[in-house]
Length: 394
Ligand code: MG
Image (tube, rainbow, N blue to C red; front, side, top):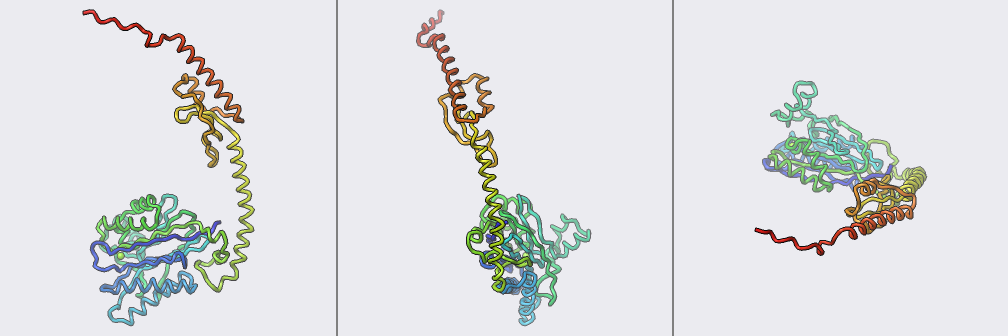
């Protein structure tokens, strides 16, 4: 498996109704392999302080090598500590949905509250996290349908948050990512305003993570922007630098956390060597197989039509496993000069095992066409020789 890295971009916006933005996000995808979204609450500036405190604490804990779950517990402690030590911040809290990525594509999502993580894989959007909200619990117990929950007046009441209680239960979801997979972290200001089909449509259409995040925020604002809106779009891409040289970029770490840890570095050189020893023969076999398919695909010629001309192609009609046929030679024969039978013959794309076979076929066809044209010109009276039409007699 090739090493992966996260490419991420986030956008946060106050929306169109609220006065301040209590949302925040963390994008340390390049340096620490961690991203997060936090939605603070508490009124005045307390909500802003809660989300910012949680994100900064998370960042510091991950940088110290703490596993994600522990890092989120640390963030809970940090917000609670600030809350009890400052009268103006009393009662503040925040959601936190965070992701860490290992170089093997193992993403771990840690989650408290009603911000969400989604996986976008193969054009399909799947919600990874369960909301810790009143309405979501009512949906789980069957008291509400998901449709009723969407418009329920109490849909913003959450049942779990950071900074409220010394104990916090963190949900952890492992997700295996492949190249091109996307993960969306977002606050409820996006998901209460924009339907999931529309979110999926934007992630499908816009390849650039930053523009995709901006388009999601724009869509929430267009729908009313009733809350602060935050979207972080994360994409798993191949990490060529890790493949090429840097043995330390490969983790020998099967725990839930993946960012770099200084104290674990000794094992990594060996891991890279093991990976290379395993990968190189596989690559060699694949290259041989690919070459063999290419040889098979490219040793054939066929005659077809291109730009209304009878044309010799190299390759097999329709191509084989990515080896597409290429134009070898355009002949002087226009397809309009062919009879219906000859045209059918050309359209059936006759194949030949050598170039000379294809050349012979085209030569015979040209001879037939020329003979036919000579006959036509000798038996038909040229229009210029025709006598002028008699003038109509009144
Ligand atoms: Mg919100």
